[in-house]
Image 1 (spheres, rainbow, N blue to C red):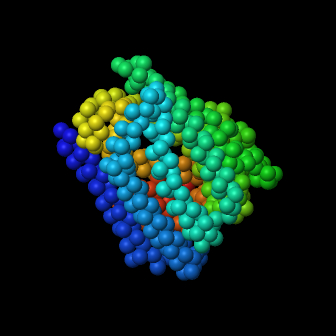
Image 2: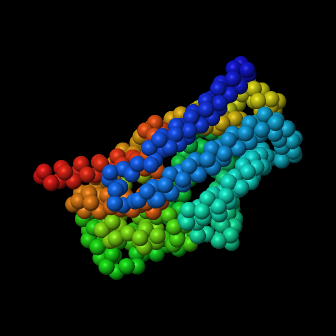
Image 3: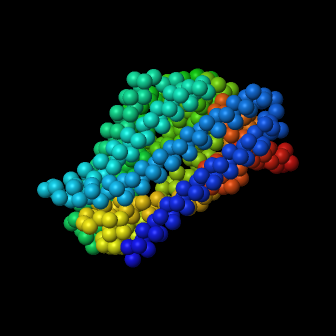
Length: 420
């Protein structure tokens, strides 16, 4: 049984490596074959020099991503087959409560993974992003962000892990259910607190300053019965010149956030179209739907962990003689991670559908698709987006429809409006 479990893991793990590398190479080869052609909808918006820069930016990001993925895979194998048996033996032998052992165990692994990722983050931030004129962050701000992120992550992980271990210890027959209840409540609380407690630790959020734009926003929001206090601008320009907008929070803390870089580079009509798109997510309850799906999936996940985590062959398959439950949680999570990777297209398909629904809402609210199309073109140019992704890569990874497809969809809606 131990050999079968190990073989299953290695097949899943190697399949993930091969498939991920295949998709990355397929996407790059497709870009190399088609990347010199300016799509018809972008003619007059970008020139050959800009297109070449877009292609180079995609190449460089893909190369870095490939190296980072490979490093993470090698590190995972080293930890799993060389470090893990020794680490478990050392920690299990300490005269500490099981909860403290679990915190030390996952703390050590998190530190190793975090340290290994720092060189890639540094290169991406201070070399690649600066090369293409995006990065504006200082070393001081980068280090401050890192320290804050580490502290916040440690606190959140510590709370979750301690609660899970307590349920396992004191409610051995039903811990999976109570862990799920706690996890669900924790996630909802975190979604509620993030916009008003955590996010302001990194950025300054304030109502949109432009009075003329604010009046236009008020008129737009009046159409759907939303309050203006939910629209904020954020000083993301102190880190990057990338432009974006997003929806966050739930209940009374829900808000739409516009990057200051977006406000500075787009016309009012384009900003309103982007805002209408985000309102579409809001009105269509996309975050709520994703939350419900997450809650249902996590219930099944916790029960599966409950069935497997105390199974001795699982530990012996990886050379672990003891059976501390925290090691079992890690091993099960590795299997889930490999399996979950191959379900990525399902989540991507759902979010792409949500994006189309939000685009339709944007057209319905503004009465035309032209501002949204212009905004997408400018966003693509400003962010050096890949205009020629491979369809299979899109199907597997993309949370948004590819830009050309998205613009064509918006044009179709405009034709329907003109018919009526």
